[in-house]
Length: 451
Ligand SMILES: NC(=O)c1ccc[n+]([C@@H]2O[C@H](COP(=O)([O-])OP(=O)(O)OC[C@H]3O[C@@H](n4cnc5c(N)ncnc54)[C@H](O)[C@@H]3O)[C@@H](O)[C@H]2O)c1
Image (cartoon, rainbow, N blue to C red; front, top):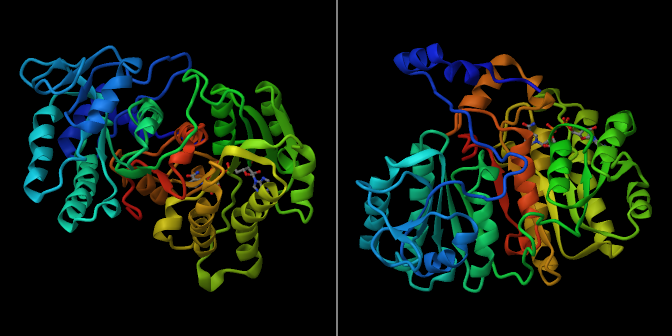
């Protein structure tokens, strides 16, 4: 994995002075989830008033001991003011009642005094309603307006702070805890400026310390990089793991599987009998399928050979299509299961020299959207995760200038770590993940690519 020496420099004593004086980007070291940590929030939660905020106050004491509010609208919350209040680690603002243009000024009034009182790596979540659920055009427009606000606020955050917008459907309020445990914690360190919709879902997590206990996960491309981090994270959260990779990666795969107490399945996912082999190896079925295996074979279209095109389309798109359908047809994906497809922000934005890769990644996003409605009846979710620049051997091989641009051209001014992608996959793999389906979650630090 490449190391980001600039971030070390920018955070050294001399570097900090120099970077400030010359006006260079000053990325901070993001706070990430550490093994053994118990609570999602270590610090003060500031909650606004509102019906969704009231729901949050019901479970917030399980996330933190310090709950504050402005005014006296929230049961159990202490009053807070910018002049006399504690520093704030996380903020939940209920914007669901902002249904008129004039009411949007509440966004400015609420956030302005709070911004100077935020701790390092603070997390903000704004709650709203999906505009398409509102019949009144002015109300729908006001709720849509909040999206613009939240994305801009994400770009203005300092010190590693993040902002997300959660659109909560009627009846999905009981899924807020799982989403906030993710988006208010360091697990979402490299996600910012995103919009995610929560729909009603019957399943919920039983034990927040091991949210994946009792679930079995299949992860492809698990021998190294992002796939290995996903395997580790799913196992940390209690899942039993079955790990797939090609014969060349057999020893790494077996070592990781042994360490995690899981199963190693040596298999080329493009082999003609891949589906039959896989079905033979996971006879009891699985709850979580993560299609992470992926390759790049970059060339501009003018120089793209059929081989380069086909190999990327086969591994990245056709294999996930074929294997997902085969596992479902064989009844091997359990009810309330989760399928996660590893896309990429270049699949959303396009990228020079990557027509094959971006075609395959956009195809995965299409697959998630297309399969979600039919799988919903069984509580199975299917989503795409779109990483931005992640520090792996894939990106270590990029030319220097491209690599630097990939790292800095985002709101957080740095690349993400495999763990950041893995945490997003783990969240989407929880029971209750049926609340989020057919969606794309970018893990990109709000990269300007395709933003
Ligand atoms: N690294 C990034 O910045 C980045 C950004 C966006 C998306 N992604 C995506 O994330 C995923 C993982 O990326 P990574 O950086 O960890 O890559 P990587 O090359 O380090 O790991 C990919 C793994 O997939 C395995 N694999 C490849 N072909 C396979 C096949 N036919 N059958 C079984 N296994 C196969 C490889 O052996 C390898 O272990 C890929 O889908 C990639 O496109 C990565």
